[in-house]
Every structure is written in structure tokens, then in C-alpha cells.
Image (cartoon, rainbow, N blue to C red; front, side, top):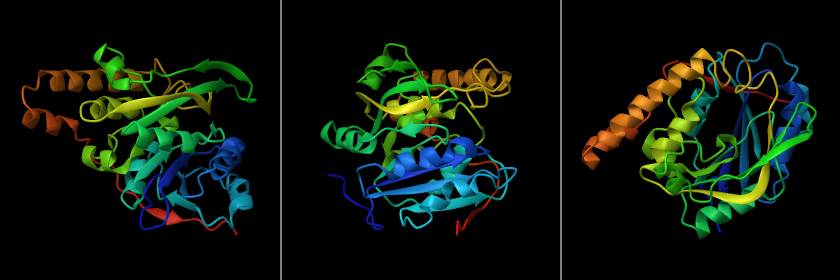
Length: 271
């Protein structure tokens, strides 16, 4: 059983969103319906262009587990996560995308795997869905992510479906705070050098693939110039880590650059 932090919760779920009113309510509902009552959910609006998303959260306004924040400028989900992590005091941190759905039991199964397997970062199998929520495929991630990374595979976890020990994020400095995309893979590469990466084989997450998602939009999706440039930089940094001859040489290469954009988070009242 996870040990609760000072807030009385065991896990904080971080859910950033930008202009995603169509799916946000369902994403939030899927987290709050988890059968781990000892959770906290922090939703952060990344300076959306309008307030259409606010009514989607009003049905949950009375839930004490929910905190809603807004950024002072648009900064991207990675910088948001780093900023939120500064005030997280639960032993575990989970992630959730605003257009996806956590299936019942997701957190229970993943927290159990973290504790039973002495893992540090746990993902899960997931189904792919389209804009209308229709299932289009299913993917099981390798049970032992470290082994598969040693064999040359770089993608061993779906980032938004993962749960991680807060201490891991603190040691590694969170995510690369200089970019908007791609740094979830970079985090997994860095984490695998020191920690145990595992996945639950059960499908616990529904991952939406649609034209406006970060991985599909022309400017940010797979194959875009932004993503190619970051992949090249990430690959070069990973090669530097491989060449490190001692732990003292390796450790500085595992620490993420801090956020390069200054911004604030303010609370949003839903009532």
C-alpha cells in the first residue's frame, strides 16, 4: 500500500490541456472515478484562447481532490509538469492527457506494480481510439523496459499512461524544460540509466489519435521539423551518456535543463 504524503494522498495526477474542451470532461471524470480515493488531480489550462473548457469541469467543482490552475502564458505540457512538480508532496506522480481516458483500476494496478516489483516508473498497455472514441488498435508495452532499451528500443512506455516515483523526477530534474515536445522519451532514456522501468500488461488507458493531437498535428507530429530536430539532439545526448566512463561523468548528463520560460500558475474557480 502506498504511503500517503502530507496531503493524505498517495498519488498526484497532472493533466495539462490547451483548447481541448471536447474531451477534457471525460478525461477528468476518468481520473476522479479511479478506485484509489487517495489521489489528487491537478488540471492546468495552458492559456487556452477561450473559456469553453470551464463548463466541462463544473460538474466536479465540489470534489476536494481537484485543483484547477491556469498558466500566465502558453508554455507547453512539459514546462507545466515541471512547474506543478515544485509543489507536489505525494510519493507518486501520474500523468494523463486531456483527450485520453484512464480505464477503471488504472492507478490501482500501476501503484501495485510500483510497490510489488520495486519499480520506479510504470506504464501499461493501451488501446488507441479515434475522434469519436472508436477503438482502432491496441498496444502492449514490454514488461521490462530496461531490457528492451538495452536491446536498442527507445519507446518502452506511453508517457501519459505512466506513474512514477516523485523521487525519480526530483533526482533527474523533471522533464527537459526547453522544449514543447519529445522530451517524454528523453526522460525515459535518462531514467533507465538509474531506475527500473516496467509496464502492466493489462489495457488500462485509452489513447486518442486525432488530427489536432500533439503527435499528429503538422507542426508538432511525428515527422515534423520540430520533432526531427529534437530527436537528433536527444540522440546526440544519449551518445554522450554511452561514452561516459564513470558515474561521475554520467550523472550530470542525466539532469534535465530547467524551464527556459518564466510563467506563473493561478487558481481557477469553477463556481
